Length: 300
Ligand SMILES: Nc1ncnc2c1ncn2[C@@H]1O[C@H](COP(=O)(O)OP(=O)(O)OP(=O)(O)O)[C@@H](O)[C@H]1O
Ligand SMILES: [Mg+2]
Picture 1: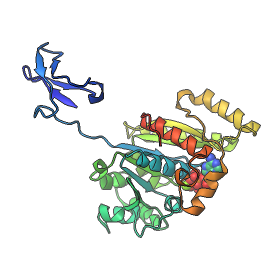
Picture 2: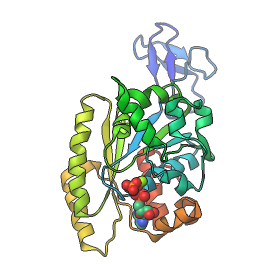
Picture 3: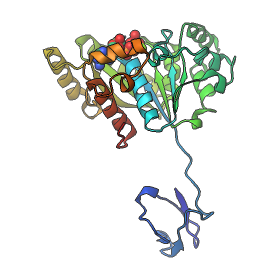
Picture 4: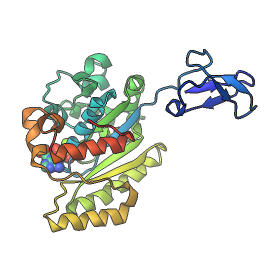
């Protein structure tokens, strides 16, 4: 929250949760005078809410991108955050994992066929989905046909609605295409799931090269976490690759998501792991990821 000193009018940004109860006066750090602190004071202007924009991405297929994007989105929604999940994949797997069949999605938003509120589908409480699907192939052509500024197509459409949400999370397709470039021009943080196999490690190095090239243009873009997925203690390779990842990328490596058969089974029931098997290892691991990404002590 923002307070203005009643004497010198200087601005103070304060974390409201750190103010003890029943405080009536605060001291200005500039003019050192005491001024009244009351929540109803017209001098208190609430800080503008800032949406977090996250892309879950890696060029390699089958590493757990959709599983991670869907569970991060649903976990945050269960914690009371308003979340928009955007599927940029022609496979449209996010909707499948959530057990919903939206009639419209990202294509209609980008082509302008529908206004945003009609393009998104409420998949759960606090969770809205802009679904992917085959029609996104046409969106790629639309972006490529633009003479200039094609990489900002998504940003132009999403900027006006972004403030309605606490989080905007992207599930991206494998490979590298104009939509992924658009996602990387819009988001400020990326989360990279890496399955613990040698092939993926090579894919990660390649992907990070392309990622750095985009960072030159989107200065706010940063690598947030690399998430080791399909971790299986019984497989020796799994531990070796995890160790290698930690050596190479240190603090960026999150706690691994263990291999858990319930994560494979849940989509067939149109349920997330929090609904299908709330006490499973898969559920525990994704709850931990929700805590890590949100930076809050969330207990689902
Ligand atoms: N930790 C896990 N344990 C067991 N199975 C998992 C785990 N994570 C994901 N899966 C399963 O592995 C498969 C691939 O996962 P997912 O679809 O999330 O990968 P992806 O990276 O999105 O794939 P694509 O590149 O094709 O979009 C799915 O069937 C999913 O249910
Ligand atoms: Mg996927």
